[in-house]
Length: 248
Image (tube, rainbow, N blue to C red):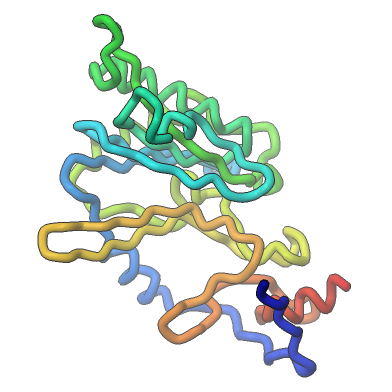
């Protein structure tokens, strides 16, 4: 069994807040979707929430790994290998915690209108999997992504087919935050991110609503991109060990 790391006796120096916007733009601009997939967003900026949909035009084989103690998910059991359905038609990422699961209903309606889904004796049943982030403490607390959000995200996906992927404060990333170890007052904005790598004709794209409890780092140079703000000086970020020492 591994040992828990020992907190440093002298906490690292706080990191100044701020990442060059050019770096963020460059990262988002390199992401692309493989052929046959569409990405769409819809959000309510005032309410601080939204949803994102990935439409699989020809269906796609899916898999899932549900982590954490309080998941808000939909139809992830369908992705297990022993079950009947082998392909999914769309995946929804949403804000709103468990309330946001309603957004998948709008995605199902849109897909049904376009005759995309699993054929059950002539009846088309769209297969839509999804997961939600907790963003209820951001923005308005009485507005959640519902079926209208999901339908609008599908329309957005169709309208933006072939265009650059939108990242940042869009879709499921609208209410995302990071660095919540000391509570929301000292957290920073998260968002929706995308990145791609290619190997010959193969394209692998990762899409994520970054809603982390801890800090976000750049693996290339270990720079802190966003995280827990220092209660004494909010223009700097704390190392997680520093935050833990304040909590205790």
